[in-house]
View (cartoon, rainbow, N blue to C red):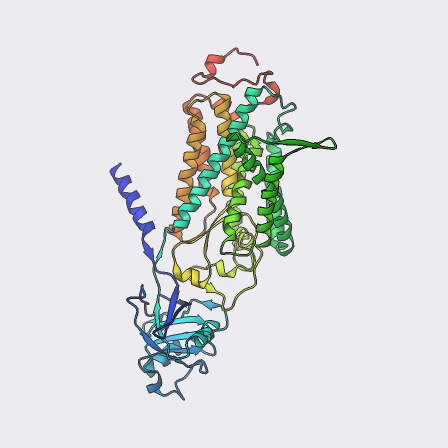
Amino acid sequence: MGSVVRIVILSVIFLASLTNCQEGILHVSDGSTQREFCIVHNHSWTALAQSLDTATVYPLVNLTSQLLCNSSGITPDLVKGKAVVVMRGDCDFSLKALNAQELGATALLIASNKTLVTPSANESEYAKVTIPLALMRYMDFLEAQKVFTGEMQVKLYAPPLAKLDASTLVMLLIAIITVALGGYWSGACERERLNSGQEDGGKGESKADSGELSLYSPLKVVLLVLVMCGMLVLMYYFYRILVYVIIAIFCLASANALFFCFDAVLDQIGCGTIRFSVRNWNFSVRSIILASVCIVIAVIWGVYRNEDRWIWILQDILGIAFCLNFIRTISLSNFKICVILLSLLLVYDVFFVFITPFFTKNGVSIMVQVALGPDASGEKMEGNMVQVPAEPQPPTEKLPVVMRVPRFSGLAQNLCGMQFSILGYGDIIIPGLLIAYCSRFDVWVNSSWKVYFSSCCTAYLMGMIVTFAVMLLSGMGQPALLYLVPFTLITSAVVAGCRGEMRRFWTGTSYEILDSSRKPLLPEGRTERDVEGDKC
């Protein structure tokens, strides 16, 4: 046990430690005014200071009329002991750096009209360069010239980036609260139906009285997953057309989901309503107000969906409501269906994240390409290489299928482009359907401690922690279902086995064989042997 604790502590320390990043900051001042701009550098060159206070001050010399592919025509006295800014092009970064170093410059900035990439060279070239080297946007340099009319003093530094950003914790909190609330809501609805003694009729697939849809057929589950695969492939090939269809559907679905969430909250706090009739049509004042508010929120998101600074708040609110209502509306009839659905979606997630890069032209997985959009190059990384647009990019349409929380640390990253932690809706909804089934089963067996629900929520939390830990350790995005599905399915099965209720848990409840009172399947504390011979 002691060794396990030590390993956990060391892992937490490692995850919370600081790491260098490829983006840096160019601090420009003239004594009275100061501005900061994005730069991109490489750790293999001379390392930059980690803070503004420890960074060295250099006078800046404007040589943007030069490419510095050779030192001819440049007086050493002009650049000696100063930082030099030249234009990108015609020769390697290492040659520019060696020429600047030979002339006596103390730092080299390369202004670029192209996408900023991590400056690289042959391994043998790195050791020859002893001065700091970084790329900056040419438009930033032009802006600096307008702001600073006199001599510019510059500092180059790269603040270390915390591996465990606060946005990750916020995302974890959003995920666990959403699945817990969705599961609790589903269980509360089931208890209400049991208490009211309502019949749903048929085979339990369609419940018109509650607007729910129950999945009870393995064939339908397989068809559902195949449809999802087909939709993802279509989105990959016809993204620029279908993205607007998905945005429109999301606006309608999320507004509807937000209405049901607000309505349920008002019911819980006992908020009354006023009703009136117009030509035999009954209306509720509360419903009209709620519908108006929800529609306005969805419309605002739809209009300003590409505004990164604040629209993520509305997208997360609408996304949480969408996930909650989906978990409440879609019910899995038994554990067998849960196993089939979650296992198939696990394979689906792993295949489209890890396998499809071998078949795509750009080597990016279909899942990532669809989630980020084909033009979201500013958010894509390949190994230790980063890409930062040299000029403002037109807004790119992205699918509203993820929760987004901006990184709270990393000043350099936010200067170079706003960075987000993301979590797909599927990583909340799919395990949430199992949690909802566990919550309903607690109602059926009259579990006072909600043992299935609470244990499955705990397993989901542990699975999310492992997902984030692997992501931080590997530096790569992970298919969360790869960890969430085993954690939740195995935990639920173990609980059912330990309580002697595995057969009931596996087969669930068939509404058509229950009596009119729809009493719980097994009272708390009873086993199948206690009810042998009981008739439905």
